[in-house]
Image (cartoon, rainbow, N blue to C red; front, top):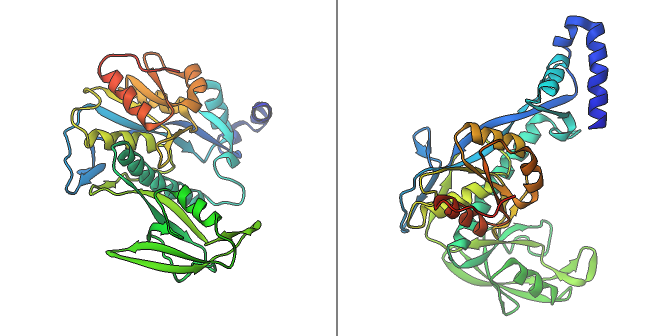
Length: 341
C-alpha cells in the first residue's frame, strides 16, 4: 500500500505537469470494484442455473441465494486511478496481482474458467456428501510416462489396491505407500459396467525412492443417481463454490431453505465441504446489499476483513464448511441469528 500511495502521489505531480494527458496515459494498475451478483436458484437465458435431473426427488425453492463477483477494470488511466482512489469506489492494485507477469489476459481468463469448472464439480460432490450419498474413488490423472500409463485411465473407479478396499483418496495413498518399488500391484477397477483387475508394477516414488509409486492421482466422487448441471455464462474463478453447494442442498431437500429471504455469500469449497477464503469481499458485500441481500455467508478466513467493511444492514454469517453454511441459512430463514463475524 505504501508503494501504491507513493506511485499515485507521483501521478498527481505528473498530472499537474501533463495536464489533459493524464486522461489518456495508461498506468500499470487495475481497478477492483463491485461486480454483478446472480441468484443461482433462478434461470439464465430461460434455463435453470442449477439443473437437477435423474431419478431423485427435487423440491421447490423460494427466496434467493446470490453468488457474488468482483469487477476488474484492466485499462486504467492516470486520472482514472486517482479518481478511484480518492472516492474509494474501487481498489487500485498493481496489475501483476491480477495478471501475473508472463501470463497474458487470455491465459488468466482460461485459468479462471478452469477454476470455475472445478468449483462446480467440488460443489456437487460436497452437497451430495452432505446429503449422505456414498463415496467412491475415481482416478483423476495418469502420469505419462509412468507405471500406470496405458493400463489405468482417468475416470476409472478404484475399488481395491493390493487387496485393500478403497473408499477415499487417502486409502489409495496408504495402500500404495505400503508397496515397495518393483512390486506388482493388483488394482481392482470399475470401467464402465465392467470390473477388472489390472496389475501395475510400482516404480520408485519421486523424492522417496524407498516407496512405491503408481503415477495416478485419486479424487473423491459421490455415487448418486442425481444428474446436476451448473450453467452460468461469463463468470470465472472458484469463489462461488459455497453458494452452489448450498443451492444444490436446497433443491434436493424438502422445504424452502431460505424461507423466502435473499441471502448472498462467497467462498471456495472442496469436495469434503471445507470453505476457503476469497479476495475482494468488500466489493462482494456491497454488491449483494445493493441487490437486496439482508445476509451474507462469509468464509471464516475472511471474517475480520468483512467485519471492518460490511455495509449497514447486512448480517454476516461466519462459515467454515458446508454444514455451517446450510445451518446459517436455516437460522436466517427462521429469524434466528447465526454465528457471526
